[in-house]
Image 1 (cartoon, rainbow, N blue to C red):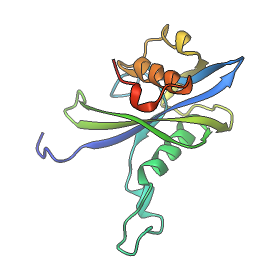
Image 2: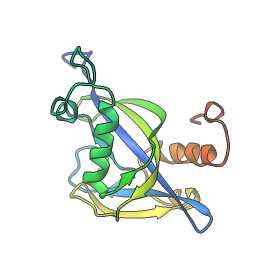
Image 3: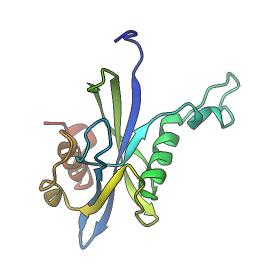
Image 4: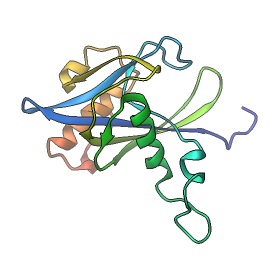
Length: 166
Protein backbone atom coordinates (compact mmCIF):
# COMPACT_ATOMS: atom_id res chain seq x y z
CA UNK A 1 0.00 0.00 0.00
CA UNK A 2 1.79 3.14 -1.18
CA UNK A 3 -0.29 5.61 0.89
CA UNK A 4 -1.77 4.17 4.03
CA UNK A 5 -4.11 7.14 4.46
CA UNK A 6 -6.13 6.41 1.31
CA UNK A 7 -9.13 4.09 1.44
CA UNK A 8 -11.94 3.28 -0.95
CA UNK A 9 -15.16 4.39 0.75
CA UNK A 10 -18.13 2.10 0.15
CA UNK A 11 -21.66 2.10 1.57
CA UNK A 12 -24.27 -0.64 1.59
CA UNK A 13 -28.02 -0.65 2.23
CA UNK A 14 -30.00 -3.36 3.91
CA UNK A 15 -33.38 -2.54 2.38
CA UNK A 16 -36.39 -4.04 4.10
CA UNK A 17 -40.15 -4.18 3.73
CA UNK A 18 -43.01 -5.90 5.54
CA UNK A 19 -44.54 -8.73 3.56
CA UNK A 20 -46.88 -11.36 4.91
CA UNK A 21 -46.34 -10.17 8.48
CA UNK A 22 -42.56 -10.52 8.38
CA UNK A 23 -39.57 -8.46 7.34
CA UNK A 24 -38.15 -9.18 3.90
CA UNK A 25 -34.67 -8.06 2.88
CA UNK A 26 -33.42 -7.41 -0.63
CA UNK A 27 -30.35 -9.46 -1.51
CA UNK A 28 -28.67 -9.66 -4.91
CA UNK A 29 -26.19 -12.05 -6.50
CA UNK A 30 -23.01 -10.34 -7.72
CA UNK A 31 -21.99 -10.85 -11.34
CA UNK A 32 -19.16 -13.30 -12.10
CA UNK A 33 -17.10 -10.44 -13.62
CA UNK A 34 -16.85 -8.53 -10.31
CA UNK A 35 -13.27 -8.18 -8.95
CA UNK A 36 -14.39 -8.61 -5.36
CA UNK A 37 -16.77 -11.37 -4.21
CA UNK A 38 -17.92 -12.62 -7.67
CA UNK A 39 -21.10 -14.77 -7.61
CA UNK A 40 -21.69 -14.06 -3.90
CA UNK A 41 -25.00 -12.76 -2.57
CA UNK A 42 -25.02 -9.36 -0.90
CA UNK A 43 -27.01 -6.17 -0.39
CA UNK A 44 -26.96 -3.17 -2.76
CA UNK A 45 -24.28 -0.53 -2.44
CA UNK A 46 -21.11 0.84 -3.91
CA UNK A 47 -18.34 3.37 -3.82
CA UNK A 48 -18.38 7.06 -3.05
CA UNK A 49 -17.44 9.16 -6.09
CA UNK A 50 -16.43 12.81 -6.00
CA UNK A 51 -19.23 13.54 -8.51
CA UNK A 52 -21.69 12.55 -5.76
CA UNK A 53 -21.02 15.95 -4.21
CA UNK A 54 -18.84 18.17 -6.43
CA UNK A 55 -21.57 18.41 -9.08
CA UNK A 56 -23.98 19.88 -6.51
CA UNK A 57 -23.97 23.16 -4.61
CA UNK A 58 -21.97 23.12 -1.36
CA UNK A 59 -24.06 23.08 1.80
CA UNK A 60 -21.77 25.49 3.68
CA UNK A 61 -20.09 28.79 2.85
CA UNK A 62 -16.70 27.03 3.07
CA UNK A 63 -17.49 24.68 0.13
CA UNK A 64 -18.30 21.62 2.20
CA UNK A 65 -20.96 19.07 1.33
CA UNK A 66 -23.16 17.39 3.92
CA UNK A 67 -24.83 14.05 3.15
CA UNK A 68 -22.28 13.08 0.46
CA UNK A 69 -22.27 9.43 1.57
CA UNK A 70 -26.06 9.19 1.75
CA UNK A 71 -26.30 10.81 -1.70
CA UNK A 72 -23.82 8.24 -3.01
CA UNK A 73 -25.72 5.34 -1.42
CA UNK A 74 -29.04 6.47 -2.84
CA UNK A 75 -27.44 6.81 -6.30
CA UNK A 76 -25.91 3.32 -6.05
CA UNK A 77 -29.24 1.79 -4.99
CA UNK A 78 -31.03 3.50 -7.89
CA UNK A 79 -28.35 2.32 -10.36
CA UNK A 80 -28.06 -1.24 -9.06
CA UNK A 81 -31.66 -2.14 -8.24
CA UNK A 82 -33.86 0.80 -9.36
CA UNK A 83 -35.34 1.42 -5.89
CA UNK A 84 -35.90 4.42 -3.67
CA UNK A 85 -35.34 4.10 0.08
CA UNK A 86 -36.92 5.83 3.02
CA UNK A 87 -34.98 7.20 6.00
CA UNK A 88 -31.42 5.82 6.05
CA UNK A 89 -30.01 4.69 9.42
CA UNK A 90 -26.39 3.82 10.25
CA UNK A 91 -25.71 0.22 11.31
CA UNK A 92 -21.93 -0.34 11.45
CA UNK A 93 -18.61 -0.03 9.66
CA UNK A 94 -16.18 -2.60 8.29
CA UNK A 95 -12.57 -2.34 7.10
CA UNK A 96 -10.84 -4.86 4.82
CA UNK A 97 -8.14 -5.15 2.19
CA UNK A 98 -9.33 -6.18 -1.27
CA UNK A 99 -7.49 -8.97 -3.13
CA UNK A 100 -5.87 -6.28 -5.31
CA UNK A 101 -4.42 -4.61 -2.18
CA UNK A 102 -6.81 -1.65 -1.99
CA UNK A 103 -7.99 -0.88 1.58
CA UNK A 104 -11.74 -0.43 1.90
CA UNK A 105 -13.95 1.16 4.53
CA UNK A 106 -17.55 0.00 4.21
CA UNK A 107 -20.33 1.82 6.04
CA UNK A 108 -23.45 -0.30 6.37
CA UNK A 109 -26.88 1.31 6.61
CA UNK A 110 -30.47 0.08 6.71
CA UNK A 111 -33.56 1.68 5.25
CA UNK A 112 -37.16 0.83 4.45
CA UNK A 113 -38.21 0.23 0.86
CA UNK A 114 -39.98 3.35 -0.43
CA UNK A 115 -40.79 2.81 -4.11
CA UNK A 116 -39.82 1.24 -7.41
CA UNK A 117 -39.61 -2.21 -8.93
CA UNK A 118 -36.34 -4.09 -8.80
CA UNK A 119 -34.45 -3.83 -12.07
CA UNK A 120 -30.86 -5.11 -11.90
CA UNK A 121 -27.89 -3.48 -13.61
CA UNK A 122 -24.89 -5.44 -14.95
CA UNK A 123 -23.37 -5.79 -11.44
CA UNK A 124 -25.94 -8.38 -10.36
CA UNK A 125 -27.54 -11.42 -11.96
CA UNK A 126 -30.36 -12.32 -9.52
CA UNK A 127 -32.33 -10.87 -6.62
CA UNK A 128 -34.78 -12.00 -3.99
CA UNK A 129 -36.75 -10.45 -1.15
CA UNK A 130 -36.12 -12.93 1.67
CA UNK A 131 -36.77 -13.22 5.39
CA UNK A 132 -33.80 -13.38 7.75
CA UNK A 133 -34.24 -17.15 7.95
CA UNK A 134 -34.40 -17.50 4.15
CA UNK A 135 -31.31 -15.29 3.71
CA UNK A 136 -29.29 -17.85 5.69
CA UNK A 137 -29.70 -20.33 2.80
CA UNK A 138 -27.79 -18.09 0.35
CA UNK A 139 -24.02 -17.86 -0.20
CA UNK A 140 -23.72 -14.36 1.24
CA UNK A 141 -20.52 -12.35 1.56
CA UNK A 142 -19.06 -13.04 4.99
CA UNK A 143 -20.76 -10.88 7.63
CA UNK A 144 -23.86 -9.89 5.66
CA UNK A 145 -26.11 -12.40 7.43
CA UNK A 146 -25.01 -10.96 10.79
CA UNK A 147 -25.86 -7.47 9.59
CA UNK A 148 -29.31 -8.64 8.47
CA UNK A 149 -29.77 -10.32 11.88
CA UNK A 150 -28.90 -7.03 13.58
CA UNK A 151 -31.49 -5.14 11.50
CA UNK A 152 -34.05 -7.87 12.20
CA UNK A 153 -33.48 -7.38 15.94
CA UNK A 154 -33.71 -3.58 15.67
CA UNK A 155 -36.94 -3.83 13.68
CA UNK A 156 -38.19 -6.31 16.29
CA UNK A 157 -37.86 -3.67 18.99
CA UNK A 158 -34.33 -4.05 20.36
CA UNK A 159 -32.54 -0.81 21.06
CA UNK A 160 -29.79 -0.09 18.54
CA UNK A 161 -27.14 0.09 21.26
CA UNK A 162 -28.09 -3.43 22.43
CA UNK A 163 -27.55 -5.01 19.01
CA UNK A 164 -23.99 -6.10 18.28
CA UNK A 165 -22.16 -7.98 15.52
CA UNK A 166 -21.41 -11.51 16.80
